[in-house]
Image 1: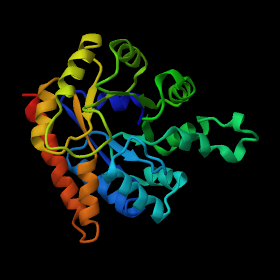
Image 2: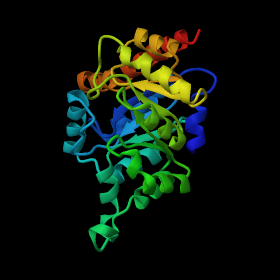
Image 3: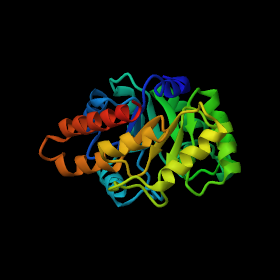
Image 4: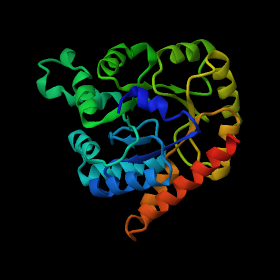
Length: 276
C-alpha cells in the first residue's frame, strides 16, 4: 500500500488508528494482535518500532518498548514482521530519527555519510505505508521527506496544542497521509477525558485546510472520547496506551488478542457515533 492508501483510509467514515509496539511481548504475538485490531475495525495500524530513547512516549509505552527490546527485536526483525502481516490496511511505522540514521550505518564510512534513505527503501519494500517521527522538526525533514516521496510513503507530522498558526500552515503544506493532532501537552498515555486543547487545535487546522485528514491522539481510551473528538471535527482517532495496557495485562493469560479486538470495536463505534 502507498501514501494514497493512508489518506484513503479516512474517506467515507472516521478512521480508527490503533498503536501497538512491535515485539511486545514477541513478534508472533504482535502479528496476532495486529490482525485482531483490524478485525475490530482498525483502518490504519500504527506499529511502533522500538527505540531505546522514546522521548515522546509516557511510562506505559516506554515499558512496552523495553519489553520488546529485551525480547530482542531489531529494525530488520520489524520489517520482516511487516512483510509477514496478513492484513489489508496501511501500516504506519512510528519511531525516532536516530534509529533511521543508524539503520544504514554499516555502509557509511563517516558520520556525514549517514542518511535515512536505506531504511525508507527497505520499509517501502516490506509494506510500510507511512512514517511518524515525533523527534523530527519540520525544518530538518527535507531529506526524509524526499526519501518518502521517492518510495511513495506518507510522512505524518504531529501538530501540538502549542504549534503556532504559521507553523501549522507549513505542516499542512508538507503533510501526506494525515496530520496527527496531539490532544494535549506532555507524553502519550491513557486519560479520563478529552482535553479542551483538542477542539481548539481542530478548529485552527480546519481554518487552514478543510479537507486534509486530521487524526487526534494522546489520551484516547474510551468510546466517549472517540465520539467527542470526531464530533468536534476529527477525521479519525489514534489510540495507543489503552491497547498497550491490554497487552501488558493479558498477554500471559492468552486473552489479549480477543480483548484488543473488543476495544478496537468499541472505539470504532464511538468514532462512527461522533460522525452522525
